[in-house]
Image 1 (tube, each protein chain N blue to C red):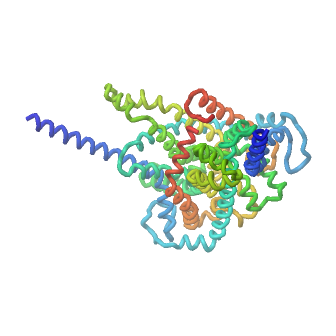
Image 2: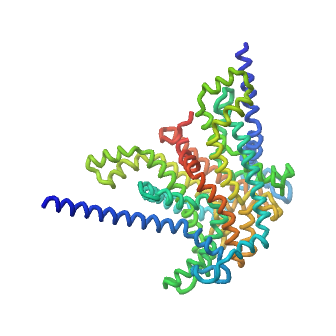
Length: 297
Length: 284
């Protein structure tokens, strides 16, 4: 009897401890996500009456030429950025050496990761400017005779966005791969070398298979952030010039906070959230199946 | 005869090793220039006045603090710094208090619904926050928190990431410690504040660092919630000023340097905590 009472008391105590955090999470995380589902089926905006319109928002999206451009741009981004981010493995191999001052370089490569996207965009915006350092350099070296437009030209704006994204993210993935490499016992590699393997085969045969959970995690993380790319577009190009850098996530934001078409924006956001969530579930299931990433029980 | 060959061989090996060392450091420095070069360029540029600031010729023109005094006097930077501090400290305080309270029963108490709550927290981490932007905005509007710091702070305060990180820390506390406290008959709140909280100090430091960097750098939510640019935090204000005064590049450069220095200092001091937590994310 008294033990049952103690149990109830503990349950009450537990929920009291969690209550303040729950209030905030429910208000600003749970309700916004769940609430955007019905919103996607309404024509809610600042003007006019809100009505349930079924799948109209989704049908409209697939006939919307601007949304099509956004999809094409997003796919382009997804196909190019995450594969290039795998290069961070090479960076991790480079800094995984026991050399004097090596941690200085690790930290140096990580600095773009902790810097705000606004600062990053301001710096690269000026470097890529028509009178900026990169154009000056290219002209001095005789590669070009007239300044390139970079972020202001329809052809080059997207590559600029991609470049800056990769530049800012490489240090993050490098750090993850480095952690992975340092978790591999050194004896394993040494044993392989004694057996006659050279450094390269030791890497391919021993290191890469053991790094698999890290490669999987990093690839999916970069895939998910590529699907949702937003910040850099918002601060550098706002989708322009001429929709050249319009991506799905920015389009959803633009529809809500420029055109105040909240229902339509929610529909686009829902498509995006579904794609991202499916990717994430894939990581999670893989982890549970012995990918070695989740040890929580 | 044999020994001379051996000596020759070893010197050859040594020069080869020195050569490859040279090559490795050359690569490290070149890559370092790609990552840190743009910051260095901005840093030097922020002290230059008079010359064409866009160009690469860093040795023309004069060096002075004019850009810094200029941006501080004309663009109200101190006000933006105060705004940033209010938002950042407010969000950190709420997150540390509520998340460390919330993580405690999730780690060390038995109660119905525990597994479900934990699963929901992980789901919240997976689902992209951008999906809920519109409804968060409407919620803030209904709460009459539009254009207030509180409206800026609340949605960005408690995060499921902090709760999960802190729960992991509580799990590392020896059980005997808690049992001993229970036998003494102390209340749960007392056990938590006197015994448990001090035990997880290192993880609290980690959460503070993550929150500091995240909140100091955030710019999107403030644009949505705050209508008065005078209330903007530094990052948002820079974006705004850059749009309006980009001909004053020296000022913008100095303002940007002011905005990134605190984050870089905090990162440099606490890099070990920070990097361990990032690397732990793959496992945890």
